Length: 377
Image (cartoon, rainbow, N blue to C red):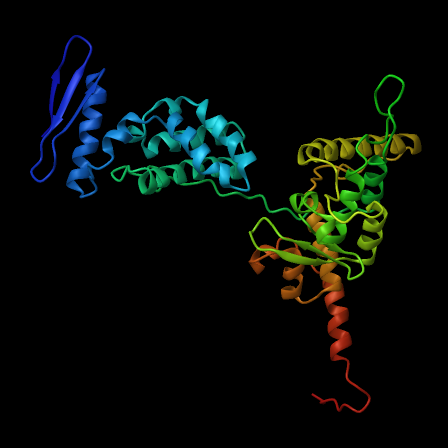
């Protein structure tokens, strides 16, 4: 049984003595906090989960300090460091970051999950935020000497993302998008002319994405050193899933790259732009194309299609390319080798063969030859 006594006018001292365990003591500003801590320690002892090693450090390290250390020692070595740092920054600004690790409970993070979900944050974003803290606790327990620290995220339900997309180009949508990506020169006032973009790299980036099914990061990391235009291949030494792959290039892709390649260039990035520039430029181009489409509809007395040039993301181009490649490479294993999908189930999100095409292939394969006998039923 825990002993709780008042220590001075504003402090409560807790002492827990159990046979076979070292004494545990801690001081709190309120009796309710002292009682809550005592209950948690006694529960861990009763259930055999109590480990004294590292407990003092867990009780003196705030989530803010742990995030700071995690960012330096773990995040810095991840490919997704940029996006994870933004999640860490968000966590540091949350009131939970001021609490020490030892007193954080699953209910704290369940409440956080519900608040973020109610605010309209995507399930995938909330899931990544919770998984980050779950791995932080695991790291603290395994590598930072806090062996007695319990991971409150293990039993917390994570939101299930429902972000599978099947967005393809509508008729004339690709042409309109590329028209909105036509490079424009600056006007005398310093702005760019309406209808185009000041970034000359986004249009060929979009075209190559539609031909190769490469991810945005893979395209931006393309180096002339790893491209053989005569063999029509591009090698990707680093990819999202950590496995290098070599991508076959279509004739259109080869022609496009030949136009982009400077004379006598052997080394260097193909695209002299950044992910942030693409993140800003692509949606702006979609909006410009939509405005131009609506303008044409108004001039011709036509009702605009509400789906045209709406909800179009850069990553949808990977879906477009994979669907096109599926018609050229009907073997799903070979298709996965091109796109870089390790799990064929993931490829199903992109692989949507037309039923009519499949019927034609079956007919071509199963049509009996003139010498083949048929069976009368």
